[in-house]
Length: 103
Image (cartoon, rainbow, N blue to C red; front, side):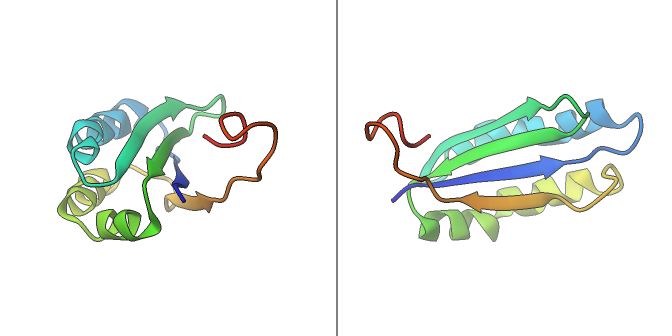
C-alpha cells in the first residue's frame, strides 16, 4: 500500500523565500530515491508551506527519513522556521473507485 505524507513548514516572519529556496533542491533529489512517487511543495493561504509526498511503501519512506537528502534539508532549514515541521502519515479511506479513493 502506498503511503501519503504531509509535512507542514512554518517560516519565520520574512523567511518564506529562504524556506522555499532550501526546499527546492530536495524536490529533484528525492524524486530519484527508490519508492518516491511524489514530493512537491505548495503554498498554504496561512503562509505555511505544505509538502505532499507519496511513497511506494512505509519501508522506503522510512529509508528516506534517515537518508542524506533529509539531513541536508534539515541543515538548510536551520534558523528559518518558527516551529518544528509537522509531519503526518495519511491512510486512505476507500471511497468511490480505487482511482477516486486515494491520492
